Length: 95
Image (cartoon, rainbow, N blue to C red; front, side, top):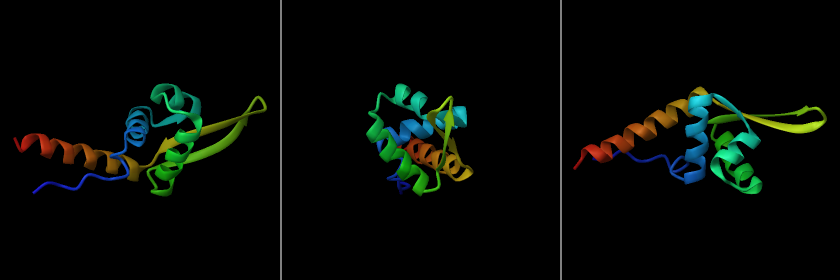
């Protein structure tokens, strides 16, 4: 009866990251860290999980000799987020 919720997106920090990227399309690591109040280590691990699933891409570069990590949502990530939201809506409609 209920659609399965994507276990990758069901984790709070990963859902927060995907939600931010859906609206911004691309964001720097520092922006995501500030918005989610995550530690750098935890955020890094969760970003890698999203990247491994193909939901985001991670680009590493330098700006003024400082490392810069930029994350961008993929079409697959947008679809996964839309499916997740749709599944949640089905749960709410079942009352």
